[in-house]
Image (cartoon, rainbow, N blue to C red; front, top):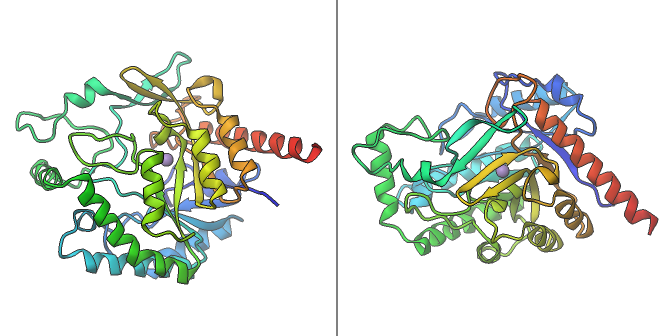
Length: 354
Ligand SMILES: [Mn+2]
């Protein structure tokens, strides 16, 4: 049987969206979370992992996906200290696996995680969403001493000087160097994941192009092909994030969904719609007609190619007056989950009738 496992991201006890809210979304199976109060590179206390598991299972849900275990910058930079951080990473894999986790999402983006220029852009219907406008990014160069601007997704634990220093270190690196450091990491981590029966699922770079001259490599089909061959094992897979790949018109997300699902290498899917613009993109409601992606086509490609992994609605807009963590309110993500359920049921029943 070809089934998706519906999941929902939850940020833990201080998340305004509660586990009780989430369990009432029809078809909900798994919580996606992490230990968020430990610095990148450190080992997660078993007590924190067990506490998450207890709360989640107490609410009648499963804890099978971690997003994310962050990769320390020394690993991405290939610094001498990386071996210690890689060992800590492997220990975290063993620990979450012992708690029943089956899938770990992570990314390999230098310094900046997801990047947007505004988190509350008002759309025509009065809802707000996250947007990326290139001219605003171009105005914020972290290496320019007179630049006092910051972007919303930036890690506020870095001081301005630290940020400049770490960006400068990356600017001495080529994409090939980053590929080499990723391979070094995977060669050590994937065997541990395999022995623990856990799938590793790299998230694409968001957006899927270089910013501030920093190398970015998990960006397109050609590079995902290369990534999967770095360590050609089933546990070395991807998180297919439709919004991250789909913000570039050059990526045929439907084709990639079918191809990598047929290879058994999509372990986790983030479903999100984006409207691609000449100068960037806007996050939109999940419905196909609201953005540039054919959400039905992507779901059908997953179904037809045997996808049976975890899937979650990705960022939602803020609607109905909700306030909270941008992209991670309850209402629009719940609408997204329901839409995904509807698409899947229609595809499944359509296939059975043939
Ligand atoms: Mn995503």
